[in-house]
Structures are given as structure tokens and as C-alpha cells.
Image (cartoon, rainbow, N blue to C red):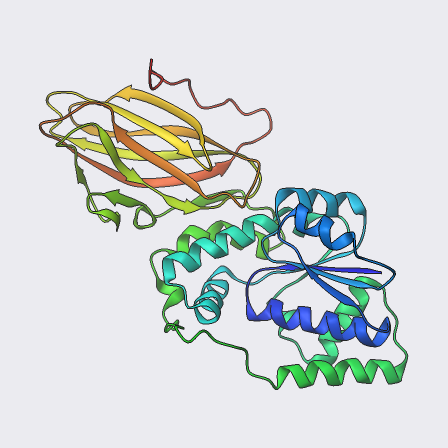
Length: 343
């Protein structure tokens, strides 16, 4: 029997995985545990499956694993937590800073997004994953259609209670997380609140602070950047993730003192450039542009990069606002570029 669990790198997910393993040991006479992030890892583990029941776990599964799971028709348990809780857990478990934890949380939530809406999935939210041992055991056994006789039922509950009594492991570099929810980067994950409410994510706002400047390299974007200098990248990032699908990003940009003129080039980069365009910049003013962001593999980080395509003696540029919305079926694509880079 296959018991599949997918969830974010949170303490709730760890608890649910432990409870599923306890259920498998008691109800199915043991199990083997397979953690897989790629289809290749899953196939390799499957080749040694034998006849033993399997608990499969993934927190950042690739698109191929998700496709295989949806096609299998097998029950899938998906653990969901509020984005700020996932960020805090990542910081405590792995000792990563806030920015990296936000990116990791977006990656995991994007990767498991479509599994949460699979017809054979059973989603566990914070109220269930944090429930008493008896309630958690009942939820899991119902999700996988496993009935337990009273003696085995009590044993599963005891195992969950025993695990609950053991404090979770924290990274020696764990950082304070009391103010995570108020951090300016957290709104970048706000689109996943729809998933917590049982709806597919449809829109995101990426705060400008999640983007970076090239001068100095890697610094968060807090305001306008100078255009003075040679042709180069001015703004890049945010290395965030989106669920699979077709999206459109709308960028609000402002320019000052561009008296000599210049060309703004924008591209979208994952593991390669997937879209690029260029257009003349005005001398001054505020304007919006729409950029297509098509996601086939949610595990790939997304960059939207802004370049000046010519040298400049003056001028400043600011990125004010970035919103991302899922394209509606039949919606018109963003307008064609005024000038393609390199032409």
C-alpha cells in the first residue's frame, strides 16, 4: 500500500509524517520510508519497492512527480500551513535568514499547489495538524481509508503522543522569529492565503524590497537606482516561485532626468531567459508594463530583470510595484515588445 504525504518544511508537516508512519507500522505491519524530490529519485526508490507498504514524502516535489501522483488515482495527504508559519519554521529548522526562508516557503507551496486540488487529495490545515493525537490519528486513517481495531488504534495514538513529547530539532543558527509576520518580505507569499482557504492561488504582490540592486550587488531594493554608467542590469530578483501555469506580471516603473534617452530592457529568467523585450524610456514619468511569466516547473526560481541597454550620463529609475495575476482562459497576451533585445 502507498501512503503519500506532501507538505511544506514546517513542524506541522513533520508531525503529520510521523503520525502516518506510526499508522503504517501498526496497521500495515511496517513500512519503508521514501523521500523524493524528483521523478528520478522516485523511480530509483520504486525499483526496490518489493511488497512492503511505502510512506512517500515530498516537500518540494518536481512537476513530474506531481503529474504521476495526479494520474495514479491514489489518495494523497497534503499538509498546508500559513505562509508566515512556514517561514518561521524554516528559520528555526535550517538556520536560514528571512529572505532565504521566504524563498524556500514559496518554492514548497508552489511545488505542492496543484496536488492540493487533486480530486484524490485530502488537505490537512493548521487546525487538524495541531489537533490532539486522537483527532490527528482519526483524520489520517480516514484520508487513507484504513480502519483500526481498538487495540491498534490505542497504539497509534500512543506513538503520536510519544513523538509530541519530543521537542523538534532546531538549527544551532536558528534566528528569532517573533516578528516574522510583520516582515516586509512576507506579503510576497500572500497569494497562498487563497490556498489556505481552499482556492487556487490567483494573484501575488511582490514587494520591491524582495528585489535587489546591482550596485551594490545583492542589496535589497529600497528606492530609485541611478542609470548613470554603462549598459548593465539595474534591478533583478526576487528568486521567488509561482505555481504552474500562465501568469502576467505588471510592473510600475518611474523615471527621472533621462534627458539623453535610453532603452529599458526587461527579461524573465528561470534556468534560462524565457522572455525578453525592450522599449525606449521617456525623459520622465511613471508607467506600467506587462510581462508574461509562464511556469512549467514551480521549483525554478523566477527573476524579472531590468537593464539599461545603452550607456547613460544621467537619470534615475524606480520599480514601485509588481503584481502577478494568473491569466484567465482566453485572455489576451501582453502586448508585443517595442524592440527585441539584440535586434
